[in-house]
Amino acid sequence: MSAVLRSGQVAEAAGVNIQTLRYYERRGLLAEPERSSGGHRLYGDGAVTVLRVIKAAQRLGFTLEEVAELLEAGRRRHGRPVAGLQERAAAKLAEVDAKIADLTTIRTALATAVDAGCDDLTVCASSDCCPIPFTDLAEENRHAGPCC
Picture 1: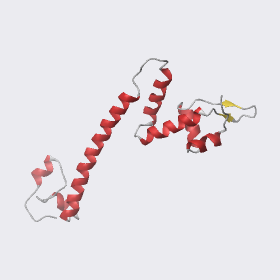
Picture 2: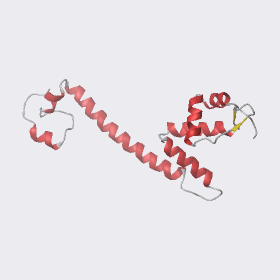
Picture 3: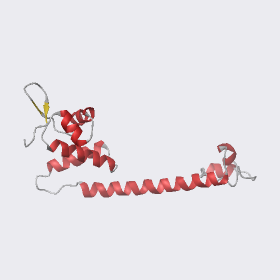
Picture 4: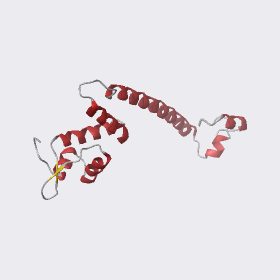
């Protein structure tokens, strides 16, 4: 072990709180540390790196379960290529792109509703000029009339 750090030092260096550190240990994301003769957790400086990786992966949209899989894939590697970051990052990128497309559609509908002055969802839904996308059933039930 190159450096010996206690829980508070590791948490501070990684920018997390001690409860997060212990939670990651319980989840198996962070290896259980050695203990001092007094029972204090003693970490190597590699623990800080692992915590930073976990937090960075979360900011990129990976769930803790996905982070655990990525960390496990890295641990099992032993010089052999395994499905890891490239494949999972490409899948996450596709997921993010789909969310952006959905959010863009939602934003457009909301901006149109604001511009149309819609103030009552029920009145708006029954109007032919309602900009909010309702189901086909709503289309069948619309009647002519002034917009919202």
